[in-house]
Length: 455
Ligand code: NAP
Image (cartoon, rainbow, N blue to C red; front, side):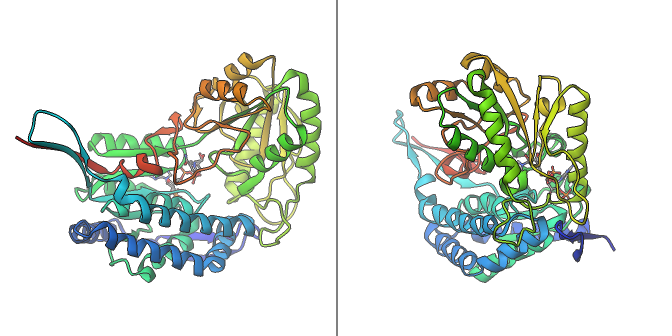
């Protein structure tokens, strides 16, 4: 019988093996979800909101248990795991409170007696999700989709099946009818059959661009709507007037939080020539001082990567960059002992065409790149296949905003690390994907935007 394994990346120990369900079993669950959709879509926003608030309460009251589970399965440090659960509860409450307004009918003045736009749910939404924020990614899709009247089925990453089951259970504990949110422990090769199934209305993927290309192609063949939240190689421009202490503190946090495995992590630091040497020296000191350790220890700044294969892949990317002429000024050596640890590392002397410049390094490795002036910094930042997040650090707000507007990305933040916030749209351009999650834009992705005309 096929299984998926949860392995503690800090120790290498198998936590549990989960039996996968067959494609047919998955299709049966999807059919049940479709059946439930016909009931669920009839509910009022108030009725759905009551359950969504209850879900937020379940998340709050089980915060420690869920946080420990996420830390065990994918290695994030425990304090950040607790924050992830808190954020899930926030997103649930946000959509419970605002869904009715965000999806309110819009009157349009025409020559009709009455004409308006109404937003009706699409049906069953299939979500294919990654392990890096095992609770948040699932809730970020589910809270708006379900509040809009859709039902959801989750194909979570194979290494976080414990989290996937805990999320499904949380929905049931909150009182959601069975079938409104369903976990499907299937192999990724079965996803094609699920997309092709007539009961799936739309698909949302958060993951790598490789998975995105595959899923979007199948969905395209079946004319099904998709939202793609893919990888990134976010550029942060550090201008010559910054407070270096503050900028290097944020740079260290930006590159190491979630053990370096955040889609919107600061990955390429593009630093103004005038302060390049000082920035690099201080940043290197702080990255070196950041404590790598057991993720359940409250004082670990960062923990292991989520899986050994991902750690080894990252190391190969670092090695390839060095062969291409890049230079390592910190880290780059796999530590001895158990676990998928990789040390905080910094690469310099990078140019377009090198691995670390062109591709996503999904782990605690920073790329520091020298820019001649503002225009050169923007040119380097935009010289990327990706366009997810981006940032500018400067004391001059107007200069920062001017550059932020020129950056090719779904979000550009000035003097703050990019975050996802339910009040603002989140997503990317270029190979970082398309479509948006969160805010009004996210809840309107999986609805039929329908015109009504009464003559
Ligand atoms: P991944 O390998 O693409 O996996 C993501 C999900 O897709 C998992 O559930 C995986 O299942 C499934 N999957 C992979 N290949 C598939 C295929 N060909 N067909 C169907 N399903 C497939 O990505 P990851 O390594 O878990 O996550 C890291 C990537 O996600 C990074 O690139 C990161 O930047 C990106 N990410 C983006 C966002 C965003 O909001 N834009 C947020 C977080 C992460 P299995 O686990 O069973 O392989």
